[in-house]
Image (cartoon, rainbow, N blue to C red; front, top):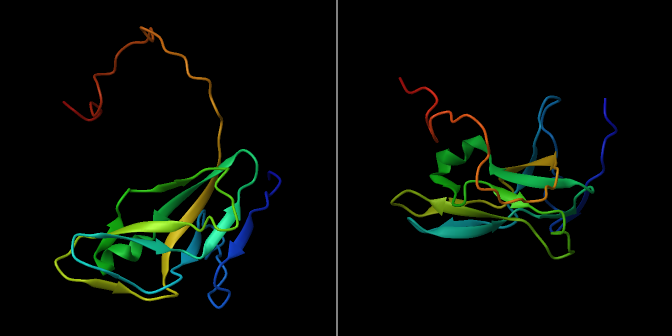
Length: 147
């Protein structure tokens, strides 16, 4: 088993639960909404999730909505969020851009688990522009499964 890395987390509201992995097999830890938000129909609100953190060297964070968020009628406007290694200041609180896809206002209460973070190691590459890759074509984007 690889050595476990440390993620330093700052909480903005200490009355809320500490982020945690909810099961032994969970790969993401849950985060909680820091303040109640009301999202008008077909609009986006930035919802604070009560954490700033310092990622381990060589890692980035993926922020995703919890799978139950559709029940509220909301989804992440940007699909997923990426947290860079250098987004680590004391006031760099993570937010979720929540899109209300319904025709009614949606209210989500402070303290609700709305997001989850996965911490991932990465390899930074040098970009090289070429005219040809020199590989056989597979049929283009979305071609798998076509008959």
